[in-house]
Amino acid sequence: MADIWVVDDDRSVRFVLAEGLREAGYSVREFEGARSALAAMSQGTPALVFTDVRMPETDGLALLDALKTRREDLPVIVMSAWTDIASTAGAFKGGAHDFLSKPFDLDAAVAMAERALEPPRHRGRERDASDEADDAELIGEAPAMRELFRAIGRLSQAPLAVLITGETGTGKELVARALHRHSPRASQPFVALNTAAIPSELLEAELFGHEAGAFTGAQRRHTGRFEQAHGGTLFLDEIGDMPLSLQTRLLRVLAEGEFFRVGGRELIQVDVRVIAATHQDLERRVAEGKFRADLLHRLDVVRLRLPPLRDRLEDVPLLAKRFLAQASAQLGGAPKRFEPSALERLKRHEWHGNVRELENLCWRVAALAPGDTVRMVDLQDSLSKRPPPPADEQDSPGWERALAHWAEHALARGEDEIYPEALARFEQILMQEALRATEGHRQLAAKRLGLGRNTLTRKLGPSRHRRSSG
Image 1 (cartoon, rainbow, N blue to C red):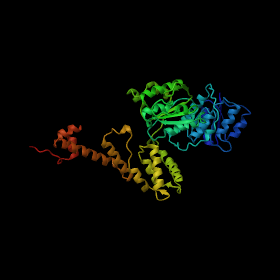
Image 2: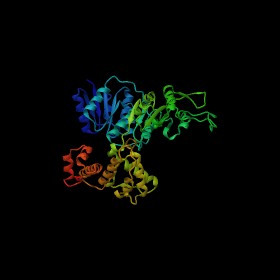
Image 3: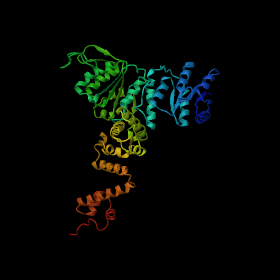
């Protein structure tokens, strides 16, 4: 029977977790703090430790260090209600076996214990001063973001290629920077390149560098982004737009870690972790012959999907407050805050531009709102200007966009029961246009609409659009 220790200053958490583990057949000891747990180490060593992060006196990460000093192979599961990158990355860098977000599912916690008690694997992690770096821009409490932070904490320690997907404005570069900042490569360069922003004829030289005289205007040797990122991380944004000819060269660098500069004969060897990002469906581009399948396999060792802001609306107030505070501070004015109704209005917006759109709005109101409190009226101009729909929605019929526009404004005005009104108008317009197209012939109009003639007659009434008997 494995002996498991649960260390948490919250008595209710200790009780629930300990009872669940006992029901699963484990022997469990409970500790309300790190000091008492470390003191008990002199009497024996557990098979597994669950520890909270934020505790009085000594926190969970310090306890993790102390436990690993005494027994390096001891599996430790770190728990926290604060699932941010600093916590998760700090836990995994310190040698934690896993990270458990609070509130947790008890069955999931027991399953995590079962996995942790399997034969351990060597982790060999070292602590890094970059743990305290500021990840303030990448924040959120939505379940999808908690899972993302946990994945970043774990992946930052693994030298794997990562493909980050998500709509424009979701923060893909922030994720890439976090992966680098909390990795063993943190002291080495982080180099970012938006492949869609560089003309295709210049992209090769930008990536791999060129020798003097390699082409017209190349007067001196240029070091490419791969050489600049040696020992560190290269972030390739919008990788789906890379020309096929360059995809072949990139594939070789990923496979062999070597390349030639443009116009050069010297074989350059580099040690670079590549993180790529795209808003496009790369599988579809592969099927269309626009992206190499073997390159996708190289880049897509691990995939992280960033949720659009409209799928994590509970994070909008948190983000808005942060962005408004930052904008107010940088503009040099008095601190500003949102009134509650303004925050609720922000939560109802569609946010086609995602986090970037929200940040831009906060800068605008920080500069233009007349008072210290941002009110509903201060948001109207910004929110009434709907951004263009995402690329995958641009082909949708115009009436759908018009309907969405009408619904947004009706809801913003506080109108209720808009569904019956919209449905009635929808039916009325369809039937009127069908009758106009068939010159008032109800039976033919009903057929064109896919309705029965009686249904059409009932909805229109007996005296409307009656066809002449001539």
